[in-house]
Image (cartoon, rainbow, N blue to C red; front, side, top):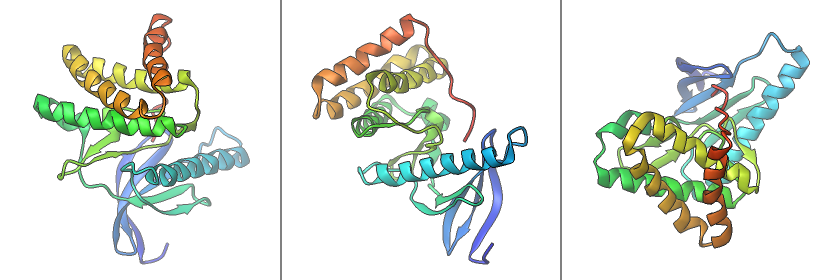
Length: 224
């Protein structure tokens, strides 16, 4: 590795990938490195890790073009299944949510709703919308991170499942207060999505209850 590119310390070790902080030609960055799986045939493992790395990096590049705040991708190393991306200074929404007043909660979740609506109307499914994957900077900017479970889809079902995951996360973490946060999220989602298609927006949100009624809730793999 070049002296201009340096990993310094591990931030998180997950089932699928590890995150390291470091430097890339003078910039503070995150290295996201997908971990080889010894239980897989080596050639298959290499292909899977490469495909997932490229899918995530390309998704980050594409959605940034829609005006969504995501980490900037500096380099993609397919040989080591590594993405080098800008380090976003801030706090995970999960870590500060309990200390936010109602006005800030409403502001943040409204904007998050608009962000996810922009993703969905352009055919992107995040796959893991949780308060752990949203960073709030000191300036109050909202960044969406971790596109490791990203998929391309235009189906109402997949978009509803994306929203349903956030609802389940809020129920488990915020208890009786989840409705306030989720309603603000839906308000923002509607305000953005209805600019394009009112009927489809209403169907996506209506389908959340249909998913709940049939007990469909599949927790994404615990991976980075």
